[in-house]
Amino acid sequence: MTMLQTSAPAPTGTVRGPRPARRGAVIATAVGVLLVAAPLVLGAYPVSMMTRMLAFAVLVLSVDLLTGVTGMPTLGQAAYFGVGAYTAALVGVHVTSDGAVQAAAALAAGLVAAAATGWVAVRARGIVFLMLTLAIGESVHQLADTWSAVGGSNGLAGMPPISVFGAALPAAGFVYWWVLAVAALVFAAVALVARSPYGRTLRGIRDNEARMRALGYRPALARFGVYCLAGAVAGVGGALWAAQARFVSPGDLGFEVAALALLSVVIGGSGSLWGPCLGAALVLLVRDSLSAYVGGHGALVLGVVFVAVVFLMPRGLAGLARSRRKEVRS
Amino acid sequence: MTAVLELQGLTRSYGSLTAVDHVDLVVREGERHALIGPNGAGKSTLFATVAGTLRATSGRVLLNGRDVTALPESARARRGLLRTYQHSSLFLGCTVLDNVALAAQRVQRVAHRFDRPARRFRRTQARALEHLESVGLAGRAHDLVSALSHGERRQLEVAMVLAAEPTLVMFDEPTAGMSAAETERFVTLLEGLPRTLTVVIVEHDLDVVFRLADRVTVLHLGSVLASGPPEAIRADEAVQAAYLGAARTEDLFTGGAR
Ligand SMILES: Nc1ncnc2c1ncn2[C@@H]1O[C@H](COP(=O)(O)OP(=O)(O)OP(=O)(O)O)[C@@H](O)[C@H]1O
Ligand SMILES: [Mg+2]
Image (cartoon, rainbow over all chains, first blue to last red; front, side):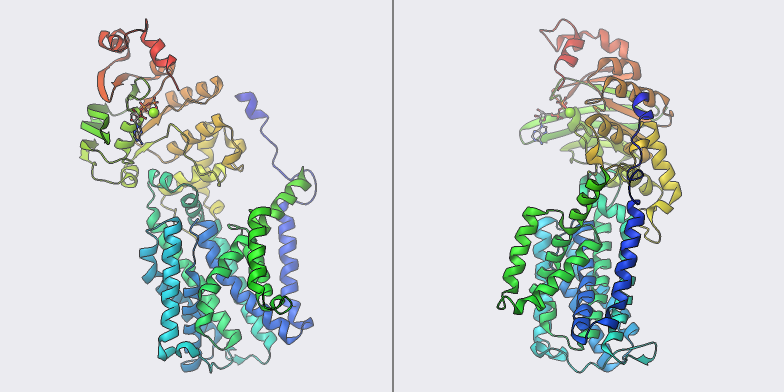
């Protein structure tokens, strides 16, 4: 035993190549620079497309927080995304064009909506939880579709362009920067949660809930907590979506959005945070842009991609990068 | 010395099978109490019922004189009643350190904090590493549990349960799957534990039992056959008579193991 100990394996990744952490930082910086520089070189359409991707990525982060980190696959996050989008639009129409106020209101609305609906859902697990969240999503969709105060099936239009810190944003590029800044902030916050003791608690619940109870945890409490957090995150995503589109309709919180968000997590690799963000960009790209080239069969393409991912790379894009890194190291 | 754990007529049935049958048992503070019996005697079921994983069909469980029979498992754990499992129950997708830190952070009441990264909670990290060190796994802290060998997982299980700072811990065949060296380390670790900690241990290895235990209870078909100091149990005719066909009690216990 003592001999075993002295020959403890050397820390991985010290021998060859840059340490994974440092390489990760380099890549993150590069991606950050590219994202910030995008409006300077791209036209208006790609920039608005990227703005939507960022907003959608925030929704996907909230799905990943539940699905990947806590092990609760969900189809309900589009509901809180929608609640956030409608809240932001209503604030925009009736109160203020300040983007920060809209985002804060959407965050609060997403949180409250998740708290109000989630306490039932989090009692269930697995497929039952998935069905409950689906029911929540459909109910909220129905509500948006029929409630005339928010425009019913026509949606909510007439939202003025957002302003930031009192200044109106003169061009699409500025809206993009605003959305990028908020999305980055949310990403950092979710990353912090994932790395915190609370994140550890959530992973414990994902891996072995019964053992958590035996250690003295009350998993239901932690599950409810993360459900509310995810609701808040999705709410912010909704506000960002509204800031770009300046129009919200029931379609923005329908089943399709929920399914695409879950699909993004699967494609990206659940549990990793950057993977699902990449997945979000990919999914939206296929749905909104490539769809035209394949005769409007975007959904079909996504279906094929989904099946391919499940069979060829079960741990998604993030898993692909991980295994490549391992090959490089050994 | 006061009774840390007292069982009164504890019964647990699976349908028509009564796996634990009116068990009365007293475990005193600081005791090293071994629970032995052939396969299927109901030892694991008894542990699960005491821990609260399984509901008692009838009878009571008293912890430090308080009736905890109605309390859920997690509440009993928070009162210091912890156990390990016969079949490892770990967090396979987490690192070795995370597994132990999960126990430590709950005791230190930081399990729901998310204001800074976990590694910046130095007290939790230090405590978790300390426990990993004590079972010889400090070098594997950042590996995934799924990369550990069976014996290492058994050791991790021990570190995890001790990091939860129990007052009473029940080990269910902790050395099953450990190498001889690992078993030795485990026994030494247990011998070094403070007497503020009470230990109940199910163990098939009678060498381990007689080295550690200051009381032995024999369970047979769900009932207590005998309970007393090790020497008395070794000599007990009822214990030997219960296993007709074997010349020595030892053969039965070890021979039937797993
Ligand atoms: N989930 C279950 N459902 C039905 N019967 C069970 C269940 N678990 C255990 N039993 C039965 O209850 C009895 C006691 O089992 P238990 O696992 O408690 O024994 P044990 O003393 O721990 O045995 P071992 O030494 O093999 O671990 C056995 O007859 C077993 O078949
Ligand atoms: Mg057993």
